[in-house]
Image 1 (spheres, rainbow, N blue to C red):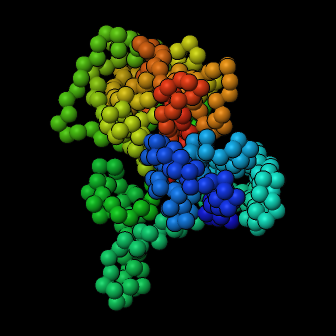
Image 2: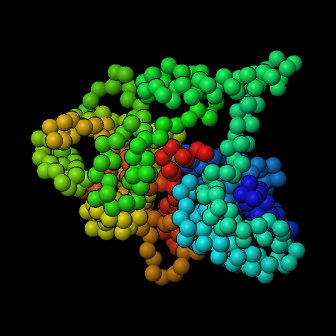
Amino acid sequence: MFFVLFSGSGKGFFNELVKWSVLDDEKMVQLTKNIQNIHHATNSRWIPTDIGSKYKYYNSYQWKEFTLSYSMIAYKGVIPREYLECWGLFVKACRLICQPVIRMKDAEEAHNLFKQYGTQLEELFGSDAVKPNHHFHCHLMESIFDYGSPYSFWLFPFERYNGDLGKLHTNNKEMELTLFRKFTEMSAVSGMVSTLSRTQKLLFSAYLRNFSFSPADIPDDYEKLCNASCAPLSECETIWKHIDHINDCLKKHQKSELLDEDEQDLLKSMYQTMYPNNTITRDDVGEFYYSLGKVYVENTRISALGSDRERHCFITAYWPDRSGLIDEGVSAMNLGRIKTFWRHTLKLNGTYVPHILCVVDWKEKFEDPRMEHGFLSPVMIYRNRSIFRGQSCGYMPVQRIHSICVHSYQTVNGFKDCIVAVPNRFHLLLNDM
């Protein structure tokens, strides 16, 4: 039921646009250009950009990525407003239910959105456009209430395993037996590797590189770890010291760099906000740091500016407030671009505690009272203009990152180089299921 959500309904909407000539050859060219201008993120799989000739060959996962990450930017200016609003209902519903952790109210809201989508779809394309899949959407809420998040039982992991098995070498004679033996062997080894330390696992990395089902380590404070990006800071004090799930890619002979006085003062202010129950002095803030171009949070790579053509460096977070102070709650979502990562040490209660920080260039939210910009939720628009320079909110622990973004540079209401972004929430340990 969930498997056909995208290759069925998502592809079906596209086919209706083609059938009714809403998407003609000229519009297909513009749609292709819009997709080519989008910088995809690490947790968004690449899709063929020549959608006019390749959409018939998109698989389910590619339709999923197009629906959730690309479509609301790509369709803007290509299809009429009423069609975009109808499609937006479907996208909102899918984004609500396609997350590893889903709340009851999210499932209920998605149920209402699916019903509105079906009604508007019939008004736009007629009753023939309504398929059995659209009826099944109205029963997804019951499935979620019975079985939990779709991540628990949809078929994407099953299809990925099939792909993994297809990569294994065989002698083309006893293929079933060979695949079964290798699958059993890899499962046994990955089970043993899961009990080893992170350093010991590196010995097996070459062996397990091409097989993606080795189990992840679930830390004891997993629930708090997942909520660190969207919970008040008072609930996250024990999380900042937990960096076992973050691979900071420190080079073997990398040299440390020296902080200047202003940077030390800003870090002191940041740490004091992170640890309100401790008294942080300037002497507690380490004078040296290691600069990094990227980090891995389990299966997700997050890159800094300049290390990967800006594809993976835009993030959203609940960190600065409107005045540039560090927000101790979750009052405002902000878009920023990561300039670099730091591995830095703080002396806390007499113990030296390492932290993985990101240095963030926060962007100004786009607010133009003259007219509507035409983009619909979940699209966010920011000016490519830096704010909060020289303030403590420019430094942030990696655990506070709420999402990484698919983004595009566009002209909005006459303002050039606006950043049009779609946030893709990633969940620690579960983001590649």
